[in-house]
Length: 95
Image 1 (tube, rainbow, N blue to C red):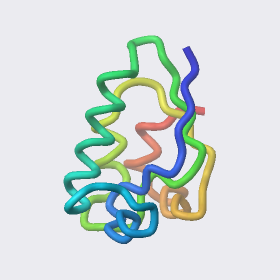
Image 2: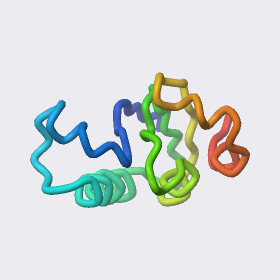
Image 3: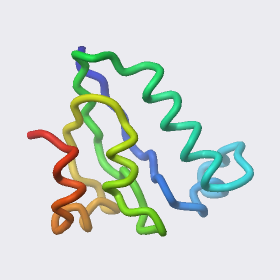
Image 4: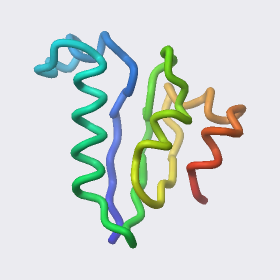
């Protein structure tokens, strides 16, 4: 099955206030999104990430991508440009 998601903004503490997300801190929201993803995505699924995986933070984009199950295809968003030069992150993406 093909699944689609956008605007996860892993590592972006200000998104909690910008988007009125009901979380105490960025670690809580990151863990919640990863848990939801991994409970939903099945072995044969492909997830199209329609921009903004993560914001530059202490953890690199490769750390977040490694946590997320299955096949991932990225359509670049404005917060994803660092992935273009991050070979470790690209390793977790297809297409």
